[in-house]
Image 1 (tube, rainbow, N blue to C red):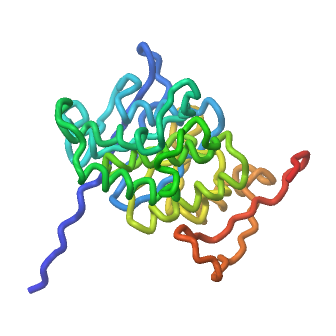
Image 2 (image 1 turned 45 degrees about the vertical axis):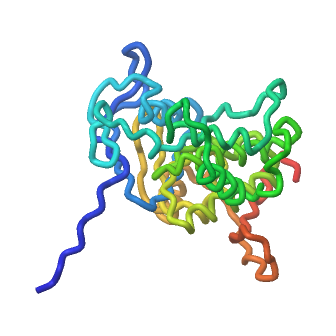
Length: 276
């Protein structure tokens, strides 16, 4: 008699879910299920509702209809918020706030203990591991105001990781940084994906992430118009917008690289009018 493996509970399930602001629906009738280990890129033109969908999932925009469940629990009854890590879109660190990378990442541990209890050795070890995971283990004592924009993004990803979430939600993690920093961030996300981290990533820079994600969800005018594999998405784009799909040139990884974070290098083809 064979033993049937239990079906894992979805990390997130949306059924006909709608979100918006002050009763104005921005995203409507979304059906979306995220399974453990999924790495999903959420795409769509400006104004399509990507950020509203993410904010709605997290309770930061109004839930105007349908169902939202985390780990099989309706969101209005879900209380274990440490299981959800969030890196928002507007996430530069103010130069007026003096703090080290270690101190910023340590904020991710606050929800795991009473406010009156000081951090312990276990918290310190988790903070060190989070910074090492994003390739900044040697910058623990560095003032974050002296770090580059890409390094600050990695500090904030480490802060989210320090809460030890079961899903990491990121809104445009590679936006506004140079191409070299995008590749470093892509290496970090590739490393997390290899570790089995479930991720939902809002992005415009699919070129930097296409070898990392296993699924693409595309929003258009507040509704999902595609949900499938990167290969199927390329065919979808070619069929619906000839001449406007993503062009990629993929090179093999450098096997002589001994760094801790390695992934295939993705080099976007230059587009008209852009400079390298």
